Length: 444
Ligand code: HSE
Image (tube, rainbow, N blue to C red; front, top):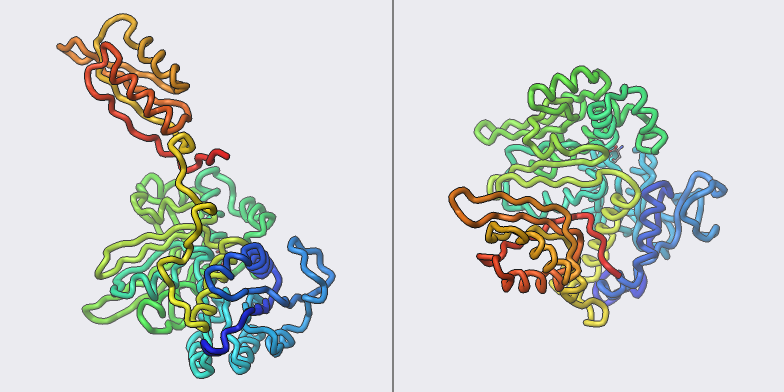
């Protein structure tokens, strides 16, 4: 495909319509106008393959878009790009190679496949002149592949380590924080749909090892053999171990560790439970979250945390690869105006529309009625107090009053502060800080 033959529509075929396949379809469709805007071409999910057409699914699509024959999608001349989301190794590999032969680029979330056959598949894609994207194969929604390959390209990596399996992290977190037994949390994890069909992948460290092998390749250019590395799971960890680790200032986490000694050029890769000091962000990465700490020779340590599994995060990574393929095939550069919009579509919020709570420190005359005057002044501007504390300043006729407010807005607090500045008995310019709330819901 070249620039002259730029397609008006890029039709996407999805192999495997499970959690991630359905998520990819849903988000491709829901944001279709956005793809057209940033790419200048339409990106459309067209067909998907399933094991059973009749099965009840959350994402409903036309029955004639579904097939049980994955090969028919790979061979369909109307399909431009394939998302391989069936998992497993042999069938996925054959379909991927066939897609390459047919001149189609492939995007995958299949870590086992890349770990086992990455070298062969990368070569085949290169030979066929197509793209092979695998951002979703490691750490779900965390953009670790792009960070390693592009953003941190100036670095060598003496150490990469982190939590690469959300299910085992969920189990350990609940065992530690709630004292629930391994078996009981595992039951919950199964009910929540976290656990892979082959549970050993999550519980015995194999899934995390697949991901560690991929990261080791990206960071160091060498494919480490899974059979040659330490791979341990979480089955031997007891609540007693977790509590003992806490007393030692640590948490037990299942971590993948990739170390490179640049003095003797040795590399070691392993996945195992380890006591991680609580000061490390990775130790405080809990629940189904993944976290990866990259120590780069140029930048120092960068830590990425986020949802490592699940429909939407993983679909987000699949689509990021789809968009990259479409850009590459159509000669579209990344562009700093990627999300350029008209002022009608997106405009700066006015102060009255910017909500938040505030911290105020006042230096006031220490005399009767002063606090009441301050409270009245704030009330005049509809600013409501959440907490108040006052401390006398020894040897001084002034006191320090520290207030926090309930949620208000930038406009009201500015007016309130201006009034406080004029208030008799307030001696210095009030100190105002915002109380940051990551869960603040924007006003309509
Ligand atoms: N089973 C994996 C996990 C899913 O729990 O992290 C994402 O690869």
